[in-house]
Length: 115
Image (cartoon, rainbow, N blue to C red; front, side, top):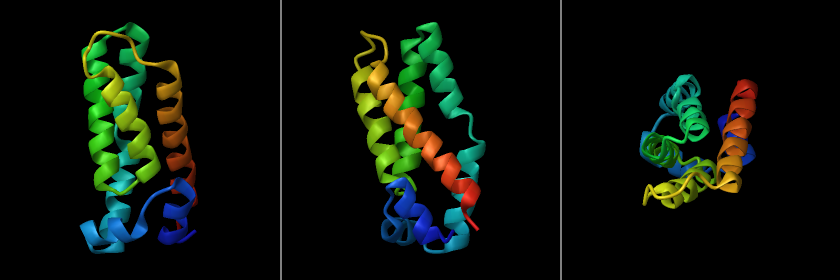
């Protein structure tokens, strides 16, 4: 799979990623770093333990990272969860968490196929 095909599969914006990071090697480097990052597991752990502040920080981090990498669908899911958690007054909406996890899983699967 090419990088262009990867971005199409995950609902991202390849042109924007290229504009921001300029080189395909750099884009791939940061995609791989995201795959190694623990923020998604931190988010799930925080939600499971009811730690709203930690869940918000994790969702906010995912929103930023995925936005910077132009992973549009993933960023939108993380952003919706982040905004829902922002007041720190309620637990994560299960549907928003599920959408974020689904986008993450799609990202991870596509990354494995990236050549």
